[in-house]
Image (cartoon, rainbow, N blue to C red):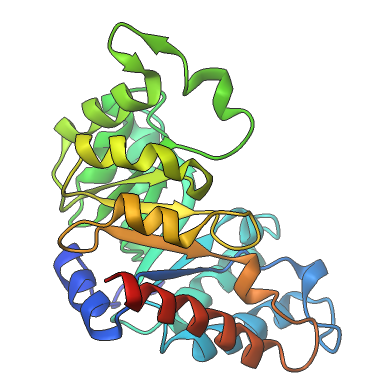
Length: 272
């Protein structure tokens, strides 16, 4: 298991953002059915595809997010591909296990150990629904828990937007979770299509990083996200997955991915 990867903390992440003039996170949500036409639909091709994407986008990205479900579906072989993909990511890049774990007691501790120690991700996405003791295991390492705050899916209306005398539920979640850690070991997920809410969220957590998925193919606006979410240290990681990695289904897929990543980086530089 890859346990020798250098830890990238938030201060090193900020240095990378300033050096690359980018706050781009590339999502490796690799679907075997969407691999370029010239690649066989095999798990070996997933690894080759990921390698090409990482090498092509590295000049423009400060972070890579591995959506674990796309790998877990293949059992032991998928876990091996995920570990090998993690090893291929340059050490200075921040890494995210997009696993959305969150459980209490020893179960939470084992999830945290799996992703933050044995696989040596720099961070993991966490669901706070079960409360403080479901988040604490992920704060026991010198890593980052990225807690779901406000998501973009249709179902977010079912619970996250319910309003009480304290305001919307998502605001209370973010406010309370922020007291469980620091801006060094906690980040929050805010969907890009919720850009109009970012200003209020930024007022609640002025110094925390926000992971913002949904720019690109999901319709989120980088301009709006940046205008409402940037702070003095940037404070944003904007993720694009499908818009970059599936920019082409031909043999030029890596070059096209690089072009899309560069477009976002150039726009980000204008906002920094």
